[in-house]
Length: 316
Ligand code: 8YV
Image (cartoon, rainbow, N blue to C red; front, side, top):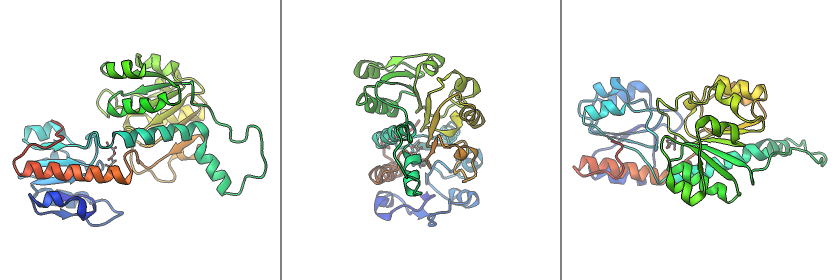
């Protein structure tokens, strides 16, 4: 098994029951593509990250490959159809990261609404000289309307958080989520209706052909001028140029972004110039507890498949 990032050895012991393990050892630098291709050529299993493209080129050069465990719930970095054709099992890490990602999404919404990052920076830079009635005044969350695009497990868990703030919940999803409707009073909406009615538009949908570039110029134009857009799913659901224009032209009030079209972004990314943007480095599932559970789940999945057993969380 080849592991494409340095992971704590104590959490990957399970794989060693079934296979020899090799790991990319550098902390800061991702495993180069050439090396991944070389390692994949001799591997029975891979433990991959979102930034590793598992495409036809890689799959063609990996004749022994039986299983790929992706350290994420999303698997848009992997050509699933091709894996299925080749009989390769792909596993992801659902459930273990649901609460942590919902927590971060809520924090991001709160940070953007109440200008928490800007305010913290203001104090740290020694700019706080006097009190003013509207000094760094943000916008309230409570009693406002949140529109959730993507009502899967993370969407529903995030929605539950918003009930503590007495928010009205709208949602759009490819299918109705009756549990969210019954349990949380969430109201199903057409996409454009949701955009028009929401004070906070929160995207938690996976990246698919249907969601790619869903948030385009037209979408941002339909949102309220006071609306805050939050994205904790995938950057590619947004046309970033359109988002930039929407923020610059005041079509919407602000944005909280954990994900970007091309990651990592540099400090010169145009969205970072705007004070009403809170930007995070894709840390939705990044709590120590959850990352450990994700690594252990990947290890168990790899070990199971390589020992001829059923994995816990296969994608196909
Ligand atoms: C990843 C994520 O775990 O699970 C996902 O789909 O986006 C994150 O939780 C992280 O990017 C590491 O691959």
